[in-house]
Image (cartoon, rainbow, N blue to C red):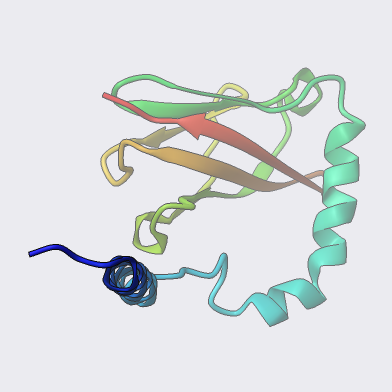
Length: 147
């Protein structure tokens, strides 16, 4: 059986419509995680984060974040030595919001250690918020955790 050009165009159009339909169905099945579940409330207090980031930029060196197979270490700058450091560190995963983790900072010898027991092997944005001598500091760093 020989197909005419009208049938060929009809088949091509049918394949195109089927392909677009598959893409629409797949797109509707994707999960979209927001950065924060209460992003509006977080946006209202974001000016404090901006100010803390400016304080961080004024330090002699940034906070150093590095990882090995069992832990993530956060080294504080020399200005923080022998001072009381309080705060938290958030590991934000852009891949899946269920992988996000929050830890309280417990520094010793001018560095803080976070165990990798609850962290996945993926890329994280490490969001460090701390207060030293009543002054707030904030820094974000990307880190790639792998085995």
